[in-house]
Length: 144
Image (cartoon, rainbow, N blue to C red; front, side):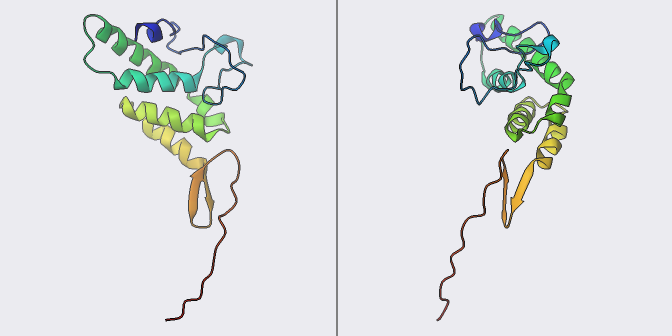
């Protein structure tokens, strides 16, 4: 936990400390915006889930985790426009889940953004950035 807390910006975001060429899970690093560069809403959401999941921390670490959690929630809430604009339902889904775990009043709003990303094909609903073809149907003889 101490290591995680070392990688939070003063504004509340968490950032990558390594570079991997195939980083699908945490790809929203605001690279085009210099004021938000190296800030990552999906990574911050992942860390927020971790912070919300830890229990029974001894000493001052518990208080530091609670403060880090509040700062992360505030940062996500201030950057809600990214979630409104993104084409990636995963980014919205992981953030909605993180805010729900932390009982943020903004969680329901993020879930409403997620509902806009839903795709419906026939009887199936899913969330994805690419359309998935409907599964094949197999008609069988229904004689009794």
